[in-house]
Image (tube, rainbow, N blue to C red; front, side, top):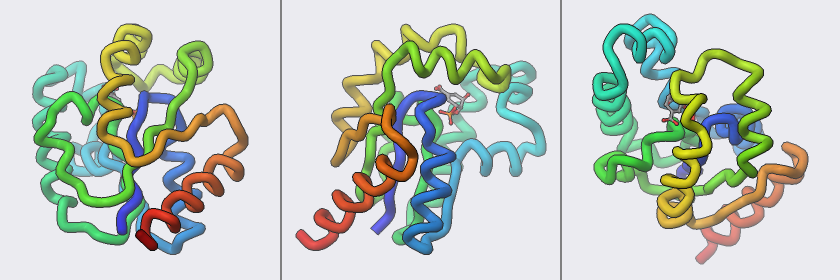
Length: 161
Ligand code: S3P
């Protein structure tokens, strides 16, 4: 069964995704990375040149392409939940919840996220959706090893039922 990570930019989806993939021996898929590879440019440049709507189209396309995966750890871009047609992946979905101040600090350290300045607004808009689409909500304030352990415990319980 896939493990699907959702949550805001800066919530640690890629970092945790890699750790979970190592621990479970599953493949790690990051939809942002797939888009960057197919377009041969960073997400920030795709936004600059073609705009957000174009990026959202690519995101939906990439999710469609991985929709048959069954044993992967998949990190979805923070905005994927905004389109119901993106929420087609089957698996155990985890919302990596993180408080707004911490997110703002983490995001301030990089300039690769085109929507960083709207972070608070986006969190307010998306928190409900992240909760709705997840099987498990985990607080990411703890260490990576504690968070990954909690996720894998829930994942194993879920697999058994
Ligand atoms: C976005 C989050 C980014 C990336 C794009 C848009 C968003 O992904 O898909 O910049 O709308 O929140 P991460 O959540 O992996 O940073």
